[in-house]
Length: 148
Image (tube, rainbow, N blue to C red; front, side, top):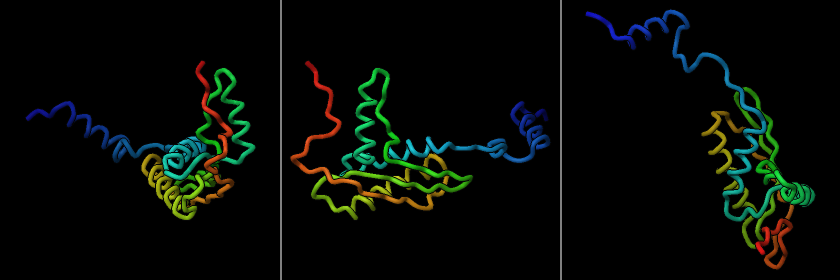
């Protein structure tokens, strides 16, 4: 009985490297990758108005107006990534009237789920600092561009 090419290749793989080819080698994930995932997940939570301190948001708004400047998804996020675990620090601005503890819990849940699902890293902690509250009558520090 002749064996197929796939069976032959499987036998050779088994003899040469041993084990599943998907487990050979090492994957490293940069802090910036985890920070982007975290920033996107945190912004998806209702009640989060913005990320970062007032100063970082001001600099970010200026940077976005420069040609080629993009909105920084990582603003207000700091990640420390190890081989198997990560710890996250977030600085957020919340909408007036929402429960800070509920928003913080929702942010933690969303961030942990997204980071662990996408990276396989264990999130050991998500520290959240609420730096401001967006009042209903306050203007945004980062106004939408006006179309004339």
